[in-house]
Every structure is written in structure tokens, then in C-alpha cells.
Length: 403
Image (cartoon, rainbow, N blue to C red; front, side, top):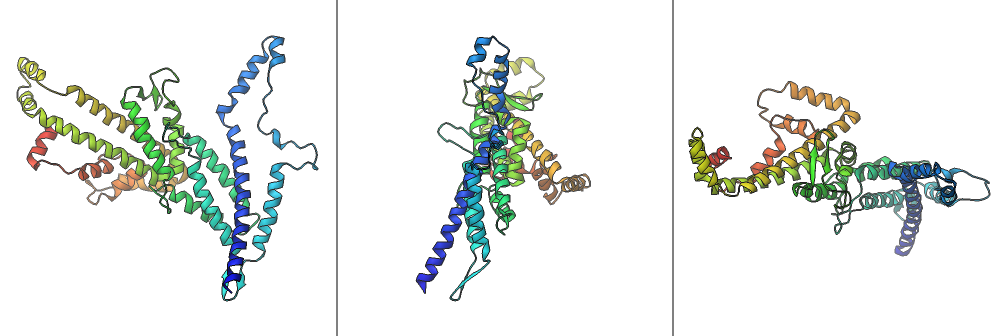
């Protein structure tokens, strides 16, 4: 009896695995074809067109690049392409899996479709993180817009599986994509949200703080001040509006909230260091505050201040983080206005008709989670509250005033 159950289980599992491997191969091929359609890959075509206008000698040496879509032209039906063979194999396997909804062995019931469903869900979850292509050694990572294109290609293929076998692919999407908005998934592995949060906060923004990159209000992006190639990535390709909108599409409000909380934690850390610097210069700052109307004394006392550059550097870091956070939040709002316009309008109504003070803080948190600006940022307040002051209340108030 146990042996017969084991054989049935193994047979159904192997069949589902084979179907999953075929679907994965089709997905990979579709991702490559989608990648060929990206704007970055048309550069060689532009170059080729320019070279055509040059001398005849250059025309002879010109290499013809294969344009996307050429694989769809068919000369004869007798020659089966790899994609044809994969689809035929998938059709046969899915027909077998779908033939019986339940298989009864002894008092046990096996559901062949559930085997396929489980394998597809696990594969899709691994593929999502794999497509990020994050390398901790070189800090290389996929652009959010390119990742979004790959994810959509993958999803399009998985949706076609519903034509072959009666499984709920939407459930696969909901389970996997929702987990990718959390810090870790159900297996305890890193998610898209956690990887990008780490990269933006610890790689991009640290380079901005070093002075190689600045925030441009006109371009609504971080731009490089150094020559191309001196830093391993172009900040414009990761921090402009299109990329951050793609990021918001991928990780949703939950993931963007995680990013905001991480950024606010960094700001709270800088505030603590600024308070320490204020404590060191406490007597001088008190003297400056008392004698603000006496230029000579102010001049003398200012010379006594220590770590002035350190204060400016930390304030710059805070400004950089706030600029990036504001940009990310506005991109989240853009995505939500397109995806859930009614809910966004409802949140705006709540904010508009809110009693003064928002005693419960619920509306402010909801507004902030949708990327909308608040008079007082609840995420920043929470981060600052977590940093317990080491001094007493009166001294804490004095240090804040001196800052």
C-alpha cells in the first residue's frame, strides 16, 4: 500500500516537474525576446543606419544585425522551431495532468493539478528574485524598468498555461508577488523589495553623499558629476521617474513603505549624531544664541565651534535622503492613481476633511502609505521615537533648539 502511494506521488511529481521545466524554458525565451525590444538594444541599429550613408567600402564590411521578430517568419511548416517543440510537449503533458481532476488510491485522493500549481509557484518565486541579478561584490543590479518587462513576459507565459490545464494562475501571481513586497518570503529568503531597499539606501545614496552624484530638481533624478565610466553605474538609469515608477509597480505600497522606513531610520541616526555634536558645542551655541545681536562676539564665538564640516556633511546626507524619498513617494502616487484612482481619491477626501491634529494618526499613515505628502511625516516620527534620548527631557529640548 505504502509503495503504491509513493509511486503515484513520485509519478505525478515528476510529470509536474517536467511541465514546469518546459514552461521555464518558454519563459526564458520570451524574456530574451522582450529584452531585444528594449530601447537600449536599438543603438546598434541606429549606428548601422548612419554607416550606410558612408562610402561604398564601409557598406561591404557592414554586419547585418538580426532584428527582433525575425524568428516569427516561417518558410515551411515542416521545420519545427524549438518553441514549436516546447509548446507541443507542454500541450501533451498538460493534457495528461488535466485528464483527471482527482486520482483515488486506497483512501487517499491525489490532485494532479495541485502538483503543477505548487511547482509553478515555487519556480515563479525563485525566478522573480533571480531576475533582479543582484551581485553583492560588484553592486550590480537590474534596472527596475527592465525587471518589470521580464516579470510581465513571465506572467504572460504563465497565463497561457490556463489554456492547457485548469489551474488558477491568478492565485500563483497573488501569492508570489505579494510575498515579494515583504522583507522576506515564506521560505525566509530575500525578496525584490528587500534587495532594492538595500541597494538604494546603501549603494546609490552613499555615492550621492560622497559627492559624485547630485539631485537635479529639473530632471527629477540623481545625476552624475563625474565622467561616464568612473562609477560602476549611471545614477540616472536607476533614480529617474520611470525607474522609480517601475519599482513602485514591482514592490507596491508595502515595499515602498519598507524603503521609506529604512530611509527614515538613516535620518534618525543622523539626527542622533547631530545632537551629539550640539552637546559638544553646547556652551558656544548658548553664547551665540544669547549674543546674536553682537557681531564681534558672534565672530569670536563662531571660531570656537568644532566639527562644523561634520554638521554640514550630516545635514547634506539628511537632505539627500529626503529628496530621494520625496521622489519615490511621488512615483508611488503616480502608479496608484493609474491603478486604483477611486481609492486614491477617497484617501485625498479623508485627508481634506480630517479634524485638526489627526489624534488617531491613522489617516496620516494611510496618506503616507499612498505616497501623498503629509504636514507631519508619520514614518519619520516613528523612526525618531524609536531612537530613545540618552539625556533628560529639558536638555533634549535645549539641544533641539540649539540645532
